[in-house]
Amino acid sequence: MTIREILMKINKCANDGMFSELYGCDPDILKMQKERYIRALEEFGKLFGEKDAYVFSAPGRTEICGNHTDHQHGRVLAAAVDLDAIAIVATNGEKAIRLQSEGYPFLEVDLDDLSPKEVEKGTTASLIRGVAACFSGLGVEVGGFDVYMTSSVLSGSGLSSSAAFEVLIGKVIDCMFNGGKAGNEEIAKFGQIAENIYFGKACGLMDQMISAVGGLVQIDFKYPSSPKIDAHQCNLDKLGFSLVITDTKGSHADLSEEYSAIPKEMRSVARFFGKDNLRDVDEKEFSARISRLKRDPEITDRSILRSAHFFADDARVGKEAEALDNEDMKTFLELVNESGRSSETLLQNLFSTATPETQDIPLALLLSRKVLEKEGACRVHGGGFAGTIQAFVPKEKVGEYTEALEGAFGKGSCHTLRIRPKGAVQII
Image 1 (cartoon, helix red, strand yellow):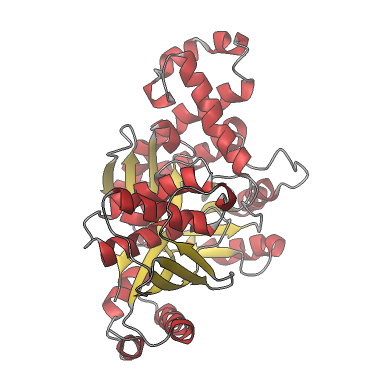
Image 2 (cartoon, rainbow, N blue to C red):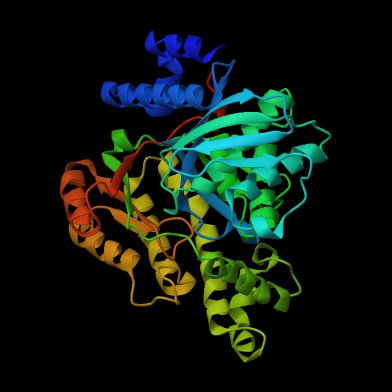
């Protein structure tokens, strides 16, 4: 289908069903999304010409429970959201992937050499090369393609813009060159490999897996090569609450060392017990031997505290999922607040130790608690140290809450999100 034909299809509202599933039924939001897709298609045409093209989408995610548990083979509860990255794609017959992402410099990745590049560490090109290399390792002949991409997933905000990007590139390659044989779960694993090895950031698999599979899911990473995924249902609107993410405008850039320290410190405790990760350590044995851990010169106090957080938050995941299944918001909100306090006092990922004078996340939580009092819940969101907080706000208080938080962090910093039932998809 050519760019012109796709534009006609969208203008005639032929994709209302898919758009509603991804973005909800609000007419204003659907109109905005259609306009967004039309702009992206027009920009693609200007850059790459009138070609047969394809359209893809991959969502951001919100972590609901399980803060930094996935890299220790733990459990998480998370959901895809209605903020996403979209891509207009066409093959180019060359051995290169050419990408124009809205607001960023044009880049080209040579497919003749898919080995990791030290000079590319920390760049978008490294993620593309890493994902392509994973498919090549399967024996897939990855061809060249041109991409115009735009994203509503806030960069550096804890909604996992990088995971959405990796998954989106993986979905494109799988559909266009592999007949969709890899599937979304495998695509998620490829995204993690790209981020760990090619980009140079230690991360678990949660972000990529949620973006890939979509919905509200509990994921057990006890066996990371084949994580157990259980779908759950949650209609927050019916329960009288809204999910609000506040972007405190702190960037996740240059925080790789802070993130990497968490799994490193947790694994130092696991090794004390002869294990590779905390999931394989008995929590009772850990609690009984804290005094011994304290005396071990290889283990820091913070490592012990962060490990205690892992055990507590890992156990909370199942309880929160059960509470949502039972529509028991009182218990759910109590657990969310517990998780938030654990991240603050044990995991200690609310601000960077390199810049302790900047504490946007603690300030946002302070304001949230003043507005919510005992009627809602709030916590640090995602990897932490900078970026966003998450709040479950009674619907009647959303206006007051937004006014208070945006008063501190600027207009447009609050985002009321909808849980998206689908993960990475080819739309057209």
